[in-house]
Image (cartoon, rainbow, N blue to C red; front, side, top):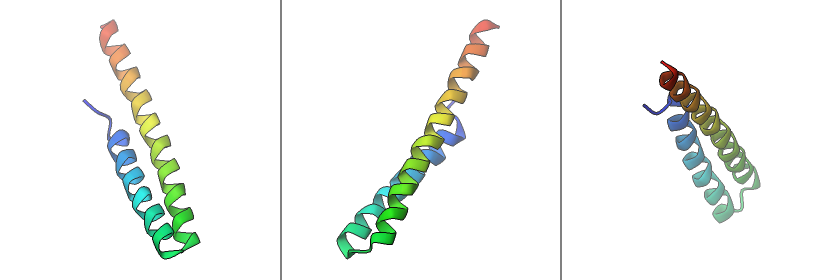
Length: 63
């Protein structure tokens, strides 16, 4: 089972990519910066979810 953080992280990355692109197209530096920040936050959240999955798998294998 995939951790919820991985799903939310992927969604946040997608939202960030849209904001980043919209900021570039419209020339809105603030929107572009928000998009880049959302993408980074999403990557971190996905990594946390991945780590949780690995811990869950490791503890399941030990049983």
